[in-house]
Length: 233
Image (tube, rainbow, N blue to C red; front, side, top):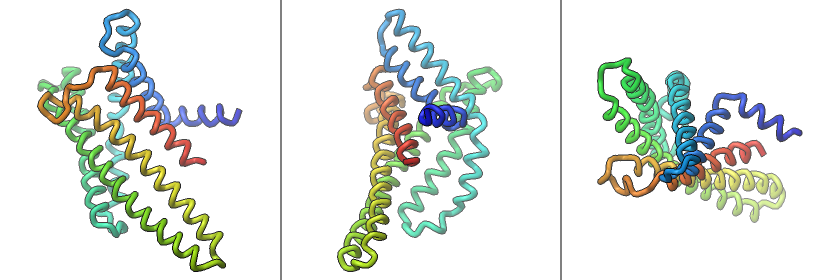
């Protein structure tokens, strides 16, 4: 019963509902694939509508993103220079993504008398850059956490009086490492799709069909949901 209550509370939140819609959208893409059967056609319609729903909801994401970026500022609290640069670059790219997507959406709806193609492409490129930066951040964070874990292990051997406290700290660091590995896998799965949807000639662009894209997106969405529940445990 408590699990059901937690699920309801999760879906009632904006981020929670977005994650569920994302999951269903990619699941529909996987089912739809490239087939021409009636079921596949219906699945593709569902996938497109759910994806369009997320685009509309993201019209209101500019201010939350801006608030986050203002809180982070120039990242003066981050001592690792590489991590700081990646985070600042990621924040800038993510902030630019939303207005560009909004312009593309307005152009598609003929609210603006311009062609949307270049703006959708720009948004896709920004998404790919953001994912690549996220992957780099994960690798840097994992290396940083592993150094902390090794230091805690060494301290636990040398200090028997604080061994239990150090053990708990080590467990927390190892949990953070696992979470970062999950985030890395999630980012790489999304990056596969982001590059695949770019114009042909860009790395592996255009090599995956709709079913494979749906599979990568579904895997990313499941990892995203697992990370949410894992962080609560």
